[in-house]
Image 1 (tube, one colour):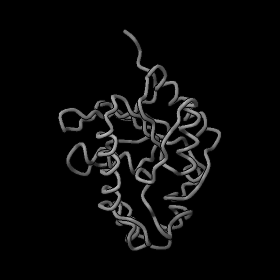
Image 2: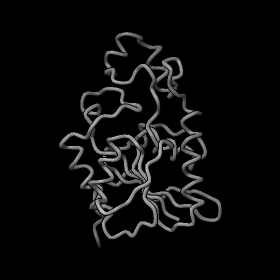
Image 3: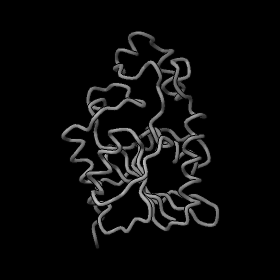
Image 4: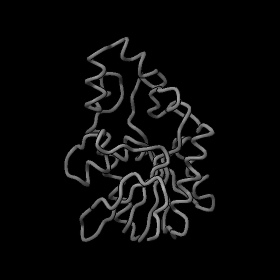
Length: 197
């Protein structure tokens, strides 16, 4: 089984450098273009099943990338819940809480703000991956968020990876495969169509 995972297009919060978490923000004009570009990368693939995070920015991306799909919306692949930081600019959080905030953000631990930590987020994403792997499908698409896609990467690699080594761009497509009980990473963050040699 192949799982094609798309990060939603640029959102209003991405542009403003605000924490989105589970907020319902819309795509920007660029975000709509990101979604259409992802659709071009997925063109010609016959998906047996399409999932999308139930947040607005993911749903919009899915609708633009695969307009004929009938997706199943799920909270399992939402972004990390950042609790009371939702809607706050990153720069403002750094001014308010300084190093303590930076360390928590780096560790992906938003529990002190009423949100999730990495373990809680990973639990949700593992549940989704088990659902996708157990569905009996050959080809699955999922429209999700940077944090959840990084969780998938961490699960597949067996340990948390440095996000800086694996940028996850708006509209980027990553491909995971599941065979004989094992997940592997096939491709990370594709942004352009492959050139035929």
